[in-house]
Length: 188
Image (tube, rainbow, N blue to C red; front, side, top):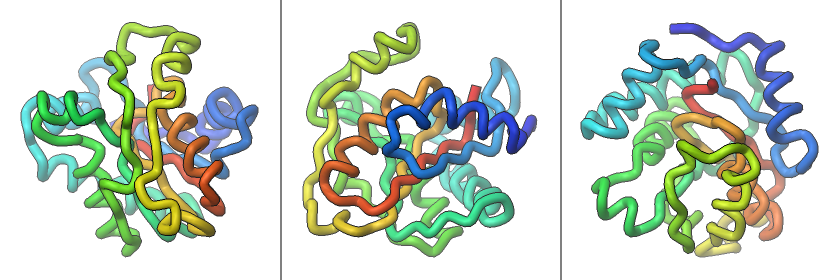
């Protein structure tokens, strides 16, 4: 399936997250490339409603975290979709990954605590700067009391530039989260 090396993850952390200082650590166990197994599985989940695939990917992600990282996680949050996008698709693929991860790590997860409040076009064809601007101030916390002092893990299917994750982490950090971890199944 093409696993990421620790060296690659360190390099990607430096590129994507180190300068902002809101993500304590991140992990993404698999390479996401055109027509590889991970891409095919994520696309099955994302575009073909294969929800069990999402839960399986979350459990697989959890297994990899348990063997390769020492995260102390109190709360798992999927990157939210805007309500219009979710209504169009019918579900949030990251929610299924978060469910599987929660089951494997025995950590609480909440799919409503982090909310996307601004509709943003798909990031697929944007460069790094456009992605950052596209998601700026797009999220809010619904119940601040539930994240204060907690170690929070943000879950996405693929972390490309890290812009979406950083914007989620920024709002969590501003509202008192202790440590913020970012995870995804795939990484380009």
